[in-house]
Image 1 (cartoon, rainbow, N blue to C red):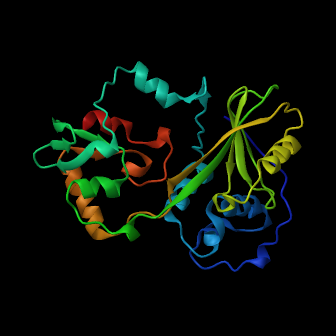
Image 2 (image 1 turned 180 degrees about the vertical axis):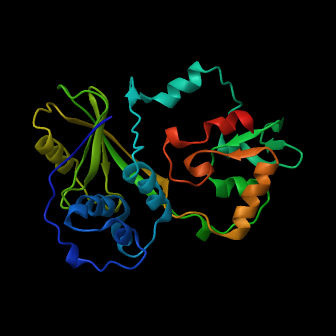
Image 3 (image 1 turned 90 degrees about the horizontal axis):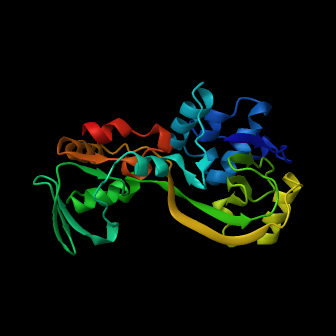
Length: 276
């Protein structure tokens, strides 16, 4: 994906107290760090000044500080891993979360509302706290801290090719970033704390300000996901022991919420799917 950034808006870092070991403490070095601070506020809110947000920190260290930064784009509006799953010959038994009643992990049986399913190995992409619950383990909600996400979808009639993303570094704007999944669809990710407070006309105006060539920008829909980003790593010893026991019994917690790690698709343990 081709990435660009808007100009910095009016922002004074001295207006905020930066707590030791917070994400802001990790990010802020000097005035050149303001872009990262502003974008972090837009995505995570003012908690960046007080909370560690360890999974966010891990994500930044892997993808933005190292030399291994990779952004995977879209083909025909769908990510490459969607195409991969259908072209690789993988034919997994896919279950809807709501159909599961219990998982007898020691005997490798899933009890559903339609009967029993016996498996050799289980790749679970559902949030790990739900998996643990289905397997009969005790969990605590405080072990799983996440942030939501909020999107506006637009259609347009202009030349703005797919796989372009623009990060909006003006603190006054409600847009965190917007990107093109196809050459006529733009997705704007909105600061979640602006949900219910932002008007479509505001977002359209800001996109046109940053990309004056955009024509006939029409609002399509909005989407809000209550759980999108694991922001703190699991540290509870009991929960970690439960996860290890599942792995020892042929269950692979997989994906951003399955393993509770803030990772993109290209960072996941794809080999583990085959070697479990």
